[in-house]
Image 1: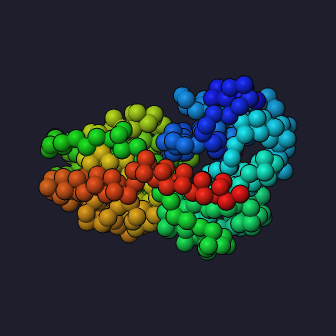
Image 2 (image 1 turned 60 degrees about the vertical axis):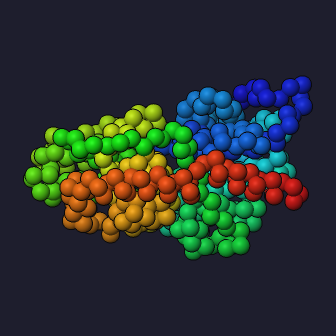
Image 3 (image 1 turned 90 degrees about the vertical axis):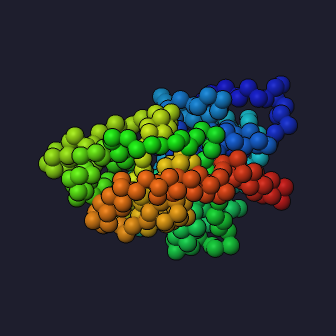
Length: 392
């Protein structure tokens, strides 16, 4: 366990209340939005809590986890949901509330909150209410199996379940969570990190795809669409793919087999800074997400918001929570899932229509300013924290 965070002096908490932010695996590279939200809290001090860290604590954020050498302790925690040592360490920070991310993790967060005798809230992000329960039970993962069997406990223990989109709220109702306990709350993005730039027609039209390379992200349909572009357009188009995943080798083979190697670059995992730099040079962002075979679907698609904040139009699918982030015909284009022909036609339209790209880019920035500003969204979140804490 790490030492007590430095904002405590002489055992007396500072003026701010403390929120324990729980995630089994802390600081996943694919989940920067959790730390982003924590950084923008103003009246609550965040302390991250989890079973293990997959990366170092971001600068300025404090974390408590089971030590890496305590493998037995981690296993016991994964199976039982309890760790007395972790609970004792967190108790020293005197949190007023526990906020867990993902329903699976919230069951572990519920045990922590019960030990601390503080309320629990949880954010539902996507797979936790879209993947079929049978798939969870057959996953072989202790955490997923626990959730498949005991998710009803979360309905009883959480004071509020926040949903990252209205789509996820509807899915949570279907999953069995009580409607009166559900609230749609967009996490938002840091608008100060994204500056729209004036894009002029360049020799190369750049498409950006930022995604884990898994079935749900629909990358194969984007590659199929690239093959279907008219030759006059394809010779000027380049696709940058940022992300890693189980399908990378399969997708790379697809590129080679179709002779489009000169049109595609796989960048692998890149930092948030790198993503912003590449986004600043993109003409369009493409996220053709699909419903996976196990039911998994997008909660919202944070990269869509980042593109819009950068003044980049978006081509995506009518899928999951994406239509809440993309206004069809205004900030981008929405297409049916798994339709490579429609995707190719949309790309061709934007390649050949610079005024439409500019208009969509401007509208996209206005849309995220109105609805997805993380500063505004965190102010709402802290109101929720205060309401629950003070109700006790």
